[in-house]
Image 1 (cartoon, rainbow, N blue to C red):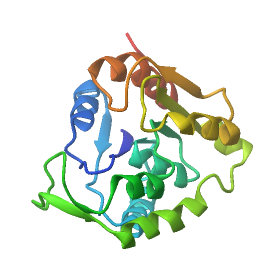
Image 2 (cartoon, rainbow, N blue to C red):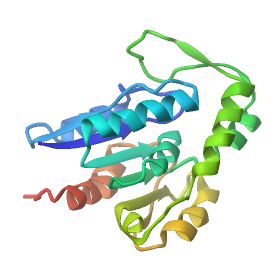
Image 3 (cartoon, rainbow, N blue to C red):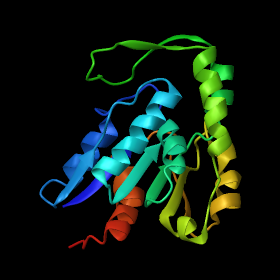
Image 4 (cartoon, rainbow, N blue to C red):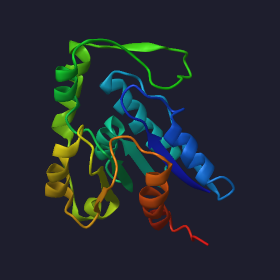
Amino acid sequence: MKKILYVHGFGSSGASGTVMMLRQQFYGKSVTVVAPALPVLPNEAINLLRDLVVREQPDLIIGTSMGGFYTELLKGWPRILVNPSFQMARLLTFKGAGRYPFLNKRADGAKDFKVDKVMIQQFKELEKESFTKITEEEREMVWGIFGKNDNVTKGFQPLFCKHYGKSHFRIFDGEHRLNDKILNSVVLPIINQILNIEVP
């Protein structure tokens, strides 16, 4: 049984539409998708993920947006970063502090969460670990997939290429959020390649 760990984006959960799409795609194909709801504070989220990869031993980690930022930090595993938000502290500073609704249903029933100075500072500290300890082996394990019309993370494409090169860098005709079409045409072929899944 192959295992995918999916790391969701900001304000989302493990019950996002992307998770549902992935599970539908791999139904009956001996691939399971693990998708936790991350704590909102960055330190708690990355600690949960680091514990989870040790326990679950995923064959592949996929992170979207904020999840792509966290996924880059999980060295030693095959990873796909989809529209990764590498500078969450800056993005949230511009977005502003306050309460924001969760975009998807959470297992704990929470409806909203707080963006404050503590969260932004934790992101700022965690960002210092980005793009460190990158070996040639790491470069071979990491893919960066960016939407051509994504205005949220467009500036991060050169940053990815600087550290990981262009061999696993892809641009798709889309925006920040994934949909069925992009998942099927762009992401799934890479997943199948990494997991060595034969496509009929």
